[in-house]
Image (tube, rainbow, N blue to C red; front, side):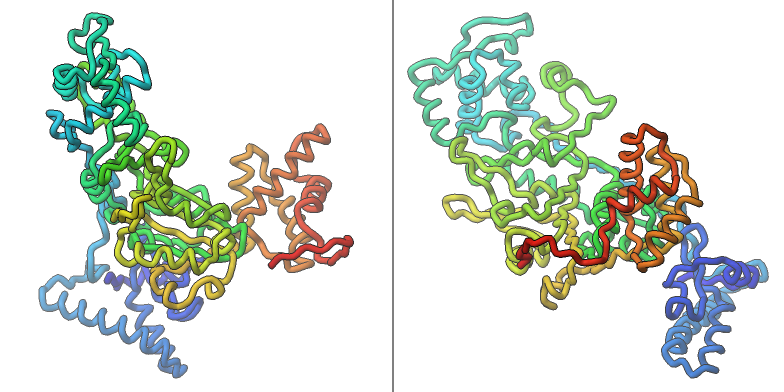
Length: 548
């Protein structure tokens, strides 16, 4: 709680336009708060004046609100008088303003997978490593020890004793030498008959080749060490992440706490107002990258986790070449992991229930991780919720356990259940009425329900400025005046966040066709709007379509 007691700030508050709705008892009534550098203060003189006005009007709701403020203020005032800290120079009572470190909290990820010192540190049984090596040699042909170690993403010095054990058991043999890198330059081949027999057994289990899987317990440890629960969003940091979007302070005050909760968010509102854009920019607040394994070993089964479509690898400027690192200089982290941006996985109408469970590859005999497992440490957004091929209630019921317990159960083909961490910000986005999609029991489990509202005219004009700047088109406010007067006000057409971008793109396409420069001429504006907006007049073209 922070109270300003200096009267000059009271005058500054009164003269400042555009206060957010949370500065009032009710939006626009009994102003008694102000923001300074993103920090909210109660203005003590305003509280007392507003309380007197509310009591005179008999406004009991306002009186209750302001009386509670007054009680807190009087307690702070009494404490300052008791401690002797109340002087003429004091302008603030209560908590001190946040420092720069508190206002812009660091988001760096200090976790890095431990580098194995011996093959036992890999967490995999020796026969399992034998099978991995045999499948890799079979797939790639004759390979050197260094190439084999690199393919398995394990330092050669760590895996070389495994190769020597395989030679002693007559599973592989040295057939040549390539280069002069010592043991790493020996070329290995499968040795019949024991090696061939062992290879058949290995292929019967799975045909997976690539980086050696990480034990499931190590994967769980990595998820917990990089949890999104450590993310802290403040009023200052959120503005930086959303600087290219027009967002009201009212929306910021809802979105920021929702992110800090690391729970679940339900965005709803009219289409075209940026629900998806808001979700995508939330990842900017996370700021750092995380480590995920290429594959996970669970109960003898391989689950491929890294997805080049859903995950974006991060290559630091000072990061060493992987091959050179593994062979010569040691590793900065366990190379069975890969460093990626915190994932943002967005699915829409294409989402089906099977996409949320392990997908078994019957040919390769391994599993592909479901979407929510790939989203751990980041954001999983279900866009256009309610328009999926599966019933909305069935989809909602699928999330009851993960939302409550923060873990999910996945089933293998043999009926084994795997308990997987559910560490992600789950976002639902819809332009349908939430009450039509979910009952009260489920909506209770979604902690934050946030309406993404239409912009007002001032915000709409500001969006035009940003869009023109991004498209390198000269902004002309007179053209926007014409657009609003002709295409919006006569029909009370609502403003949408996406419209300036879409209309300007239409104008640019038409200008190309006309072989002219893009400008805000009335002809160009009218031509773009005529093909963008649909007339309110209903027309019968002779065909019918069922929407149910």
